[in-house]
Image (cartoon, rainbow, N blue to C red; front, side, top):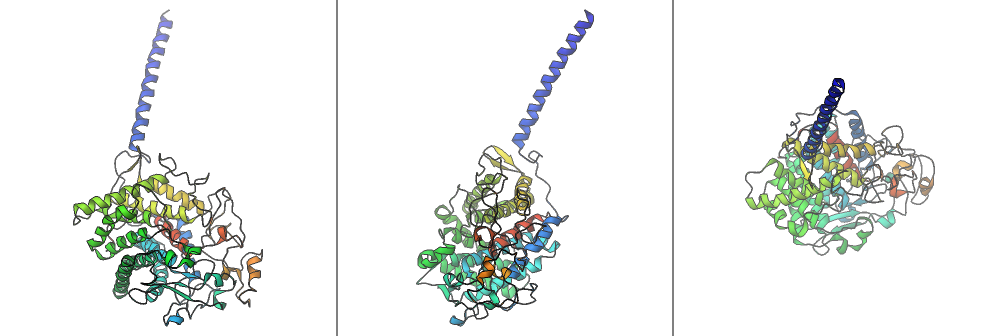
Length: 528
């Protein structure tokens, strides 16, 4: 009997202990849920110091990605590192007595489209401004800056006068009837411009953003060049704002390739960059006053060559994170609307957030469009990396997503997941960055890469190289191809331009993302 009583007493105490353990566990789970993902409760993570240990896979990928800009360069090449590229398009602009030989070809063709090319320059500038020290840690800063200048040299010449901007070199219908090397092309290359009679607000404003952001990049390197860029930026913004009209309506022919869905986002984007470049608060007053009309507050959007809203919201958030004591209360209040929407963008990216976007593959890749599907996940990851670093540097512990909280480390984890997918951590185990790893696309839709250097081809007889099933004789090193379908398949065929064609603006985005991930570092609190 005594033994039985002791046994029951022991069982009773065991039951009490078990109940207490369950209660304690429930409290811990509740606290963790309230404190958010990534651990650490409400305490902010330490601010990173100078660039830390380099992550080799991202460093290797970055060194490849920057090379694609060299492949895309037009004009008389200087210190050309690409053995199968040579001088090309030397007479571009001669019809108007201007030199438009520089710049870069848009994709696998030989067109120079000013709208996406200016976006390329803006994104590349942003990447350098945020992550120049990290690029420098892996010896890529000078390379990136040189590629940027190759574009801005072209944009300066394209802005022939205050209200005239050349926005296109080449006729896409004529250009796409040929398959030849850029060094041997013979098709006519007519010029297209926007002006007061045929305005193009979005392309003029995007070019203003490119000039303003680049002026910051070169401010301490070449102050005269920086001042020239800023002068053009201010003139172009005035032109874009005064003569408001979509270039897609003024020049209907552009709708086939780079149709614009509106110009309000470019006006806000350009004004934001002009504030950073000048410190003139009138530009912030502009984004606040025009926010309700153009910013689409509360509605997250995808960052891309046609829609700059998410980028603008993140860029303006840096003013909220790092404070600007000289700003008026109305401007500070207006900037909060941009930051709130930027947070909504971030909340949509977390896979398990209550507001998570459903636009992703089964493996977790953000997926929005069949054409060039990788531009959206890479752009989203680039913004997530920047926002994460704004939080870290400002010691902002967390953001709230409909009751769930997330930390900077969660944003970085998301960004890494997208980068890793691109580099081969995907169902078909293939890198979509040409030259990275052992398995990458061999049939990139790219004229120069597909035709042997010693081949003699005219406009049309080169199509045999397009239709060939042999791998490209020249490797388009660093090219980020279009990417997978929603079912995560990829058809490596040169004729499958939807998936196998790279673009110059994709390269700016992947360079930005990899530069942010290559090592950890705090970001500067001001670009000036």
